[in-house]
Amino acid sequence: MKNKVFFSLLIALTMVFLLGCAKTVTLQLDGGSSTSVDWLHIYDEFQKRTYLTTKAMNIQKIMLFYDYNCKFQVGHTDNSDVIDAFFFLIYSGPDWHFYERLTFLIDGETFVVDSSQNDRKVIRANKVVENVYFKIDSDILEKLSKASTIKVRASSSKFNADLELVSKHKIALKQLYKLSSSKEAFQQMVSKFWN
Image (cartoon, rainbow, N blue to C red; front, side, top):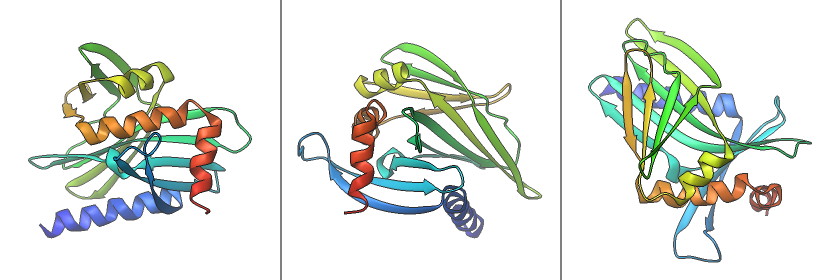
């Protein structure tokens, strides 16, 4: 239990260190619907990049000695018109898995995405961490935002980790898609953190 608490704290501190200072704001979805979503705003001054993610998108799965933490996020670089969407996988366990591919099963239709960035570390003799980013194109993100059922498989040459998104994830994906498809919507969301 102590190791799990220590590792969870280590992941949280690593995320803050890597992504900069974070603030949270709660917003109502689409015209005041009754479902609210907590959004996290992170600005990386080194990359001049703003990230938005939602706490509702955190997906965690623990299997034996393996721990999977996942989330979707959108990012925008200063002076750019492009808003990128990412699926971020943090795997920890005693063995290297070398995750390189995501397969989305969206309402029975399959979409495959290869990793766009990896960061792998040894924490101690029997604990490794893999941080893997998958860039999600707008067509897949749109399908995710409209889907009834969503399953995700992270794959390596030897291992698979399967996750299923539930209603809170689907609600957040609708808003995430809206933010990724409009620079104005993204900037309006960011401005709410400063009011």
